[in-house]
Image 1 (cartoon, rainbow, N blue to C red):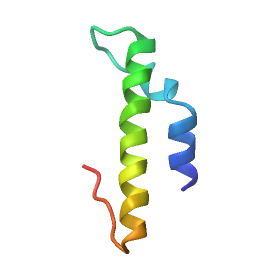
Image 2: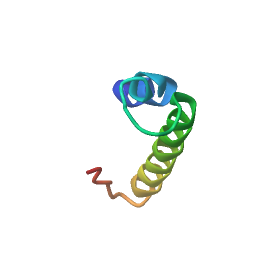
Image 3: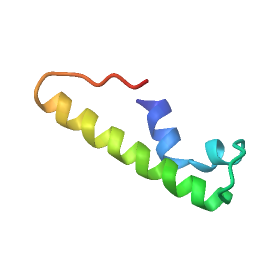
Image 4: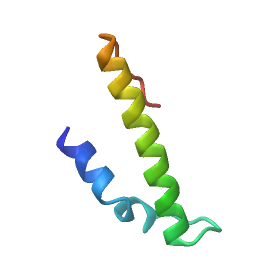
Length: 55
């Protein structure tokens, strides 16, 4: 879970190295949103004894 916490805390590490028409800040916000959605799904899955596949 340490790597996950690092990703959630530092989306700028991902956003900085990407090349998109969005600014780094816009890209960082999309990364935060996607990570939050993934985290919420994982927590729901854990509550039912399941898991999440991230592709």
